[in-house]
Length: 87
Image 1 (spheres, rainbow, N blue to C red):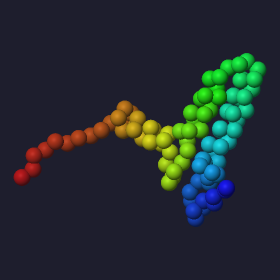
Image 2 (image 1 turned 60 degrees about the horizontal axis):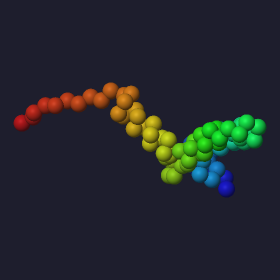
Image 3 (image 1 turned 135 degrees about the horizontal axis):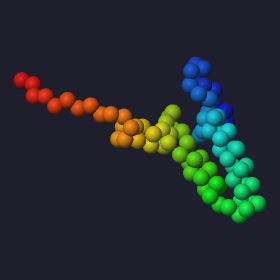
Image 4 (image 1 turned 90 degrees about the horizontal axis):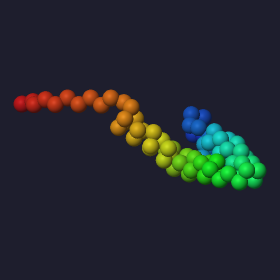
C-alpha cells in the first residue's frame, strides 16, 4: 500500500519503509541472492535482512535513526554542561 506524503512535505513511504530504503533493500537483495546461489556466501543476505529490519519506520522514526541519534549524543557531539550555584 502506497501512502502519499502529508502535504507533500514528508517523505513517501510504502508499507513500513521509505521508498529510498525499498530501493536499497531491493538492489542488495538481488546482489545477495546472486552471492548465495553462485558462491554459497550467506553474509550479504544477512546484512540485507539486518538493514531491512533497522529501517522499518513507525510514526516517522526507525531503529537506525535512534541508533544514529544515540551515537551522536554519546560519542560524536560535544556535550556542554554548566554547573553553577544560584541563589
